[in-house]
Length: 146
Ligand code: HEM
Image (cartoon, rainbow, N blue to C red; front, side, top):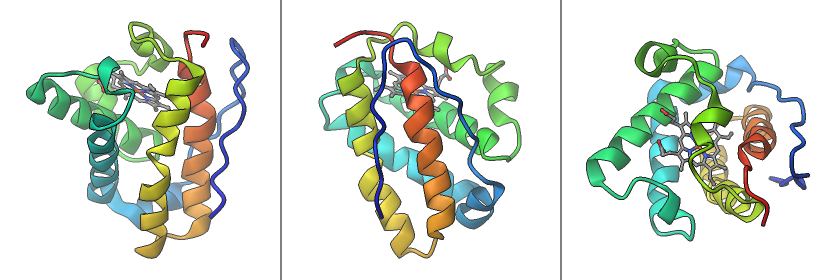
């Protein structure tokens, strides 16, 4: 698979397309929770861990909140709205120093996990749709120039 990372221009928020419904149908809610959990686990040993919760219980809760959001944005139940309120992702990321390099690292950590999903039978069409969402929406979270 060719998982490209688009060049981000500071302050520019390109239009985002939500993942196609087939992605959630194929991966399932538990599969998506597992994906997010593995991504957070790889963050733990990465250069961007410093901006994430250092406390184990908070870190575990962060996985839950994030998975709630991703299930919702992929067309599933509105767990995030129920548990955390309006998404307002840009505002929620504002307290953290997110540079273009941090976004790049964050995305890179998804790549092996997405390739693993392909090996486990998730279609490329669904995976590219999910990747496209991550690639573009992550640009929105950049709030600090390198
Ligand atoms: C597609 C892009 C992204 C989405 C959909 C996303 C989603 C989320 C969600 C749902 C939360 C939980 C917010 C809450 O419950 O209050 C969160 C938290 C957070 N995100 Fe992101 N995020 C994205 C990109 C990034 C990037 C690129 C970084 C940094 C490199 C990042 C760093 C963080 C941090 C530090 C937190 C707070 C700790 C935590 O709750 O995990 N996020 N994100």
